[in-house]
Image 1 (cartoon, one colour):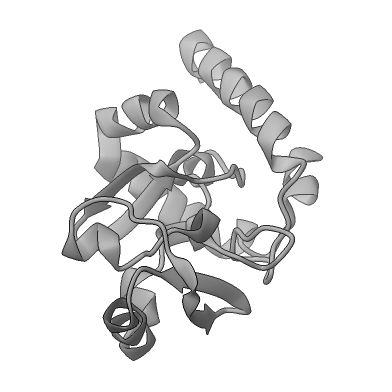
Image 2 (cartoon, one colour; image 1 turned 90 degrees about the vertical axis):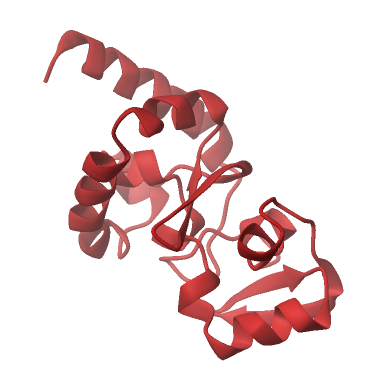
Length: 160
């Protein structure tokens, strides 16, 4: 691993620890808050339909993998219920770059990108800038790592 890559990995880990200490998971493979709300309350369907993050409301909710997803409309909720795997963020809403380095970092709903019909989040815009330099490579690494790390808690991963 290059020195630059190690330094970047250390920076990401330090940033994530500051954030991830307050996160809980409704299900170990879904990033949700202490009330089991996923995606920080944003509507996952909105990324696909209006092309931007839109806050959801408790008036329209659906449960997926024991997490509560909020929606901006009944139509979006119903669309999600028909095919939740299509609209839910990849890696349970954890940072796509983090998953590529075998970590679970919080996913910022405003640091997002839809690639090949899938929603990806990153820890923040700075991490997203790095992730965007090699999306296919990072997705491949994350896809390979996810089956194992999805079954581990944030704490377990930080102790590895």
